[in-house]
Length: 245
Ligand code: MN
Image (cartoon, rainbow, N blue to C red; front, side, top):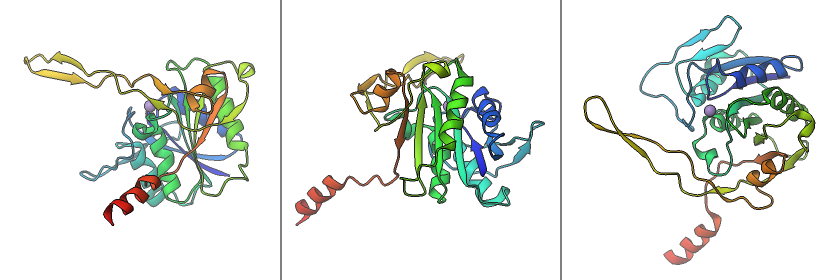
């Protein structure tokens, strides 16, 4: 099995190193990841400048671009083969509910999915890399599952609680929860006296009921949410059609 690995925390992040180490014994891996932390970059492509690919001493390729750039150019210009699977992460911090729209980790997987390749995004729920070895083992377990019941390509969003491997209860199929609005922007003043703004943290979970990714991970389960990209609101479409008559 040939696996392309990317992330949004950058090619030096502990999460991608752990993921590559965990998958190397079971697959032919290639890492193409951003040169720096591009968390929150969503599905962005760099169209205003060229991209360069460099090779690190450990064999990882790194790119002066976004996670989406990395997977896009890997599939269209760097790799001489089509991977069987795209794996992204392991992200530092959860990507649950509405996070998935902003996440570069999910976006890297999504780019593979859009090219017709099964893809899995992995995130650890808490920041700080605690029990990263456990998360990497979980990621390997998930990659080794066949998911025969799913239509291909699939796009899976996996969130892993920061727990020792033995304390994780198992994997649960979930839906995305929802968050409250983001917390307020943080205002400050730059050295020139100009007002500056830091985007604040995401809001707390709003819909964290049973069946959601929030609920499963809080209970000690690994959540796996199958994602789709079609944003069409079918019920609204019907209402709109009626309204236009
Ligand atoms: Mn990140």
